[in-house]
Amino acid sequence: AIEPLLASNQTLDVNEIPQRYDEAQLWRIYNISEAMQRRVPVGQMLEQKFGGNIWKENSKFLDISIARDQLKAARSFLSAHRLDAQILSDNIQTMIDEELLEGIQATASQQGKRAKKATRSSMHWKDYHDLDTIYSFMREIRSKFPNIVRLYTIGQTAEGRDLKVLRISENPRENKKVWIDGGIHAREWISPATVTFILYQLMSNWENQPAHIRGLTWYIMPVMNPDGYEYSRTTNRLWRKNRSPSRQNQCFGVDLNRNFDIGWNGYGSSTNPCRDTYRGSSPASELETKAVAEFLAKRKYNLESYLTYHSYGQMIVYPWAYKAVKVKDSSILQRVGSLAAERIAQKTGTTYRAAVTHEVLGIAGGGSDDWSRAALGVKYVYTIELRDRGAYGFVLPPRYIKDTALEGWTVAETVAQAIGPSS
Ligand code: ARG
Ligand code: ZN
Image (cartoon, rainbow, N blue to C red; front, side, top):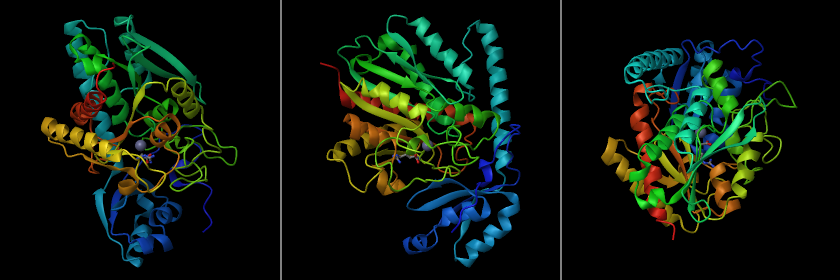
């Protein structure tokens, strides 16, 4: 099939007019048989013919949003192929509007409280924040703990924003290291919220942390894709990629989690700059990928864990993703992942599942998680897919931030314990 030049939500936003999703629906399509998928890749067809936007694709179902004016045609397509869709949302714009309103109200009431307490920080976890607020929070942490915290600018984005990483360490030379990142995908707002919360958990109680936490060196990057994040806040709530312009056509953005140098030329990514899983023109073609890869390659000694936070699906997955093979020590990764899931269930009652990536999410090359294992030999490599399971998807209402972030923190805590104190 010949692909149209532009996918629905990939058009040039010359005037940065916010993209709207009035009466756009979110569908979950079950029971796509493998045979069918080989003949008619359902997600791809819905994207190309009906301007759909894939939210999530795994071995059991496909979540895809369809614009109002394509609903009828897309429904006929489904019934022609004897497929059924469950409607997860019948108006995505309403979800986006409600998310925004709830956040504004929460921030307002938070500001009222803060005025009374006379604290300076504008950080809290009742709303999602812009990049400036997140970066100010990182600077605040550094000035409160100047002896153990370092703030790095590891590079710049295509639009000139800084890429920032915090290091927390009492003994950088000898400690075992953990890397944590968020915001690889712009629209997964719960991810930077969770990573900043992890930072807060660590530092608000640093002196009383157990040895297996205090004895580690923590590298924390809340937003790996600042351009995409800001774009998702100002212009298109459902933007996934970064914002680098393509040389081939008028489309923007590379999927940073398909751009790392591992299985890059393989399955699960696209060569088309207009698609949401565009892998880029070459491995590590993107400034964000390059900055992170170079920063970590220099620090691979003692690097014990690579944790990367995404949404949604409530899963804790580990390599490999780029091929249908398990890593040699997968039973350890399964055990620690399951332990984290058990603890989450105890704390918040939410169900997470630990699994090998390719089994539950399908094969996809170019991921940062696989790269950290393949290129650096990191042991505890996990991608954490935070809440929810599709009720709101990426547009998770702010009232769920706190508990979801606590779930993310629980994974980090459990992994730290598994690593054990540095000797
Ligand atoms: N939702 C994530 C993505 O599509 C899952 C990442 C899992 N790891 C991977 N290497 N595919 O990027
Ligand atoms: Zn993601």
